Length: 190
Image (tube, rainbow, N blue to C red; front, side, top):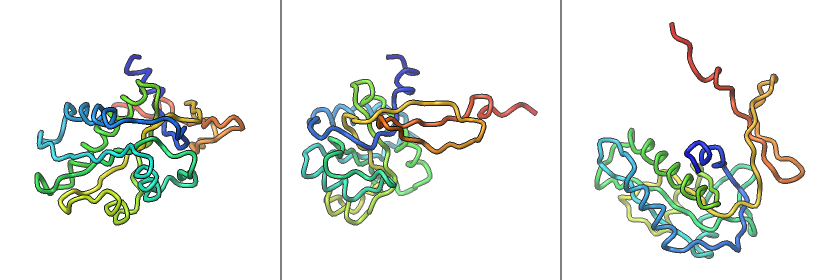
């Protein structure tokens, strides 16, 4: 797939086939790609916690919030990668959110290339998640990435004349995601 095809196919999925299993090596491969991503000042302060065993995945899912489509038993992802900042390396927060976004997108594009899907999750219960993962105090949780085999579809459409950007799920469990037109995104010169 070209990068454009990967980006167009990469959507935010919230329902997964729990019978699909990821392995420790799968998770290591995702993190390996993140090693090569640009980081602010090349400080490389990100660390990654990986979970692929069903009991731990289900426990992490309970710590996350996905809006009204929060995962429920039977549709949880096959794994999670928790993106962390190692404050022993650098305590500043201004740059690491960007680095976490780059890493998460890299993970999701890799999953998409493999026929999988995922979701960036920024809403989670910090203390219960720390308890599940048993993280050291120097590791600050920035973002959680879900990975699995989606059981739902997603298509991108241009936003209509009414300007409504809310995604709509149809009777076939396909989410219609509205995107602003290109001419609305590019700011005209002076």
